Image (cartoon, rainbow, N blue to C red):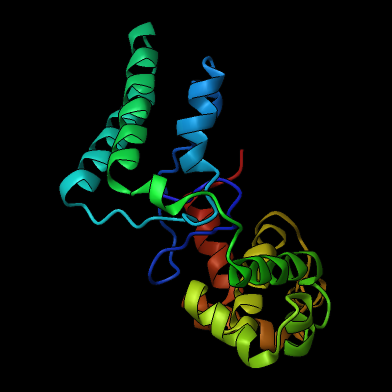
Amino acid sequence: MVNSRQLHFGFSARYEECEFICILLSTELLCANKWFLHNYVEHITANPCLPYLYLNGSGWQKEILCRLDQMHRCFNTDSIEALSYFEIIENFISIMKLFYQNLNIEKQGSGEEPSELSSLRDMITYIEKNYALRLRLSDIALAGACCKSRCCALFKKYLRDTPITYVTKLRLRKSLAALLDSDKSITDIAYEYGFCGASYYCESFQKYYGMSPLQYKKRTNTFNPPG
C-alpha cells in the first residue's frame, strides 16, 4: 500500500515482463461527509509518517488483501452491475477502518514529513527531469541538499539501488517506447535517453532485461503484433 503524494514505481523481481494489478483508492469516494474525511480518512492518507505499508498477508493485513481482491473482481467482468459499486465502497470503508484500528494513527499524528524522505523526493524529481542529460552523483546529491554518501544511503534504504543504478534503470524504462514504437536506430535511442553510446546501452539492456534491445523488440512485437 503506497500512501498519497508518495513517489513510487514497481517492477518484477527479475525485471521481466509481468502483470500488475493496481487499485487506486481515491478519497473522493468518501468525501460526502467532510468532517469524517478530514478527521479520520485524511488522518491516514495525508499522514507523512506513513509513506507506505507492505501487506504481509497475515492477520488484519490478510483481510485487506482479500477485500482488494474483491474490488478487483468487481471490475474484472464484461459488465459492471450497480451493486458492484456498493460493494467497492463497502470494501473501501472496511479497509480504512482496518488501517485506523491497527496502525495507531492517533499516536503517530500528522507531523512534518521526515527530512530524509523530503531529500529523496527532491533527488528523484531532479532525476526524472534530467535523466537524458549527463548526471553525476554530486549533481543528484546537491538536488537533495545532502552529501554524496548520504545520497547513496537514502537510495539504498528506500529504493534498494545506488543513485546511478536507479538512473540507468529509469533511462532503460524510458527508452522502451522509442525502441518498440519507432524506427530509430539503437545509437539514436542510446544518445536520446542519456547513454554515452550504443554499446553501453546494449550492455545495460542485456544486464537488466536478459536480452539485447533488438531481441526484446522482436519478442515483444511477436506477442503483441500491430493492428
